[in-house]
Length: 126
Image 1: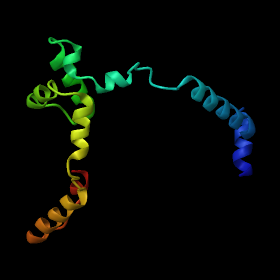
Image 2: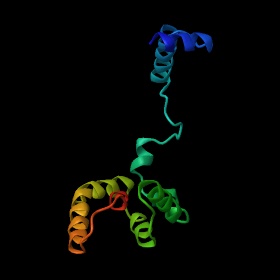
Image 3: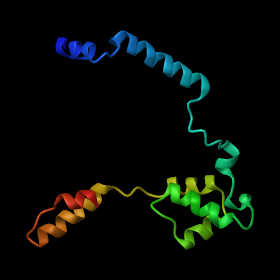
């Protein structure tokens, strides 16, 4: 520990107490002023439908939302979301049954055993 303190002193770093005070001040500032992303979204925007963006922008708004919320939108999903609210779509997602990665690995392990092989790290990444 002493070597770390000596290195920090030689490097011109402030001592730990000063850094802790600075960190506390930063946290207090962020708590007072929000510290948000500045996106300006409101509860109304979060629950609005893509159609609220206007008839010509509904598909673009739905595609943007789905790009942020999924691994990529499909044309069918964009069209479907254009007729519902974002909150309704999110509620629908939470109502779906869980898909556990363990179930996939159990299946992959059984398939590998049938071929006299083993599960590899690729199966974990999939």
